[in-house]
Length: 160
Image (tube, rainbow, N blue to C red; front, top):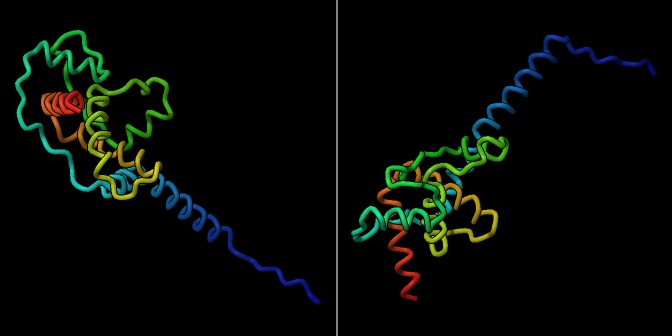
């Protein structure tokens, strides 16, 4: 039986390889955004703003510190918007591991909201949806709104 050699031009192999590598890189670049939207899709609605907010500057600073945020003075109360790619980068870089301003406050609100509003309640979805809502809150709420909602949640917990 004669040996049949299948010949594929080198150029065709290179083109297919480059195309496959490019497709993989595009998918990897889009993956954090896809996971972010999947996490948000798993949450029923978004948190409502606080009903009333009557906090003076000392109370604001106390609530901010109680949540775990670090700010030596009231002017340091701010929220730095996050995005899914920055969130993923925190896992890979020691210099980025410090929490962003407002991240803990947003997580405090996201955790409270997700306790009753998750569609799929498996642990992996809990974490993905919590991270997605935390990112969403830092992008759409101000520090004042986060503070007021956190204060309202704390007051509800004290009443229980």
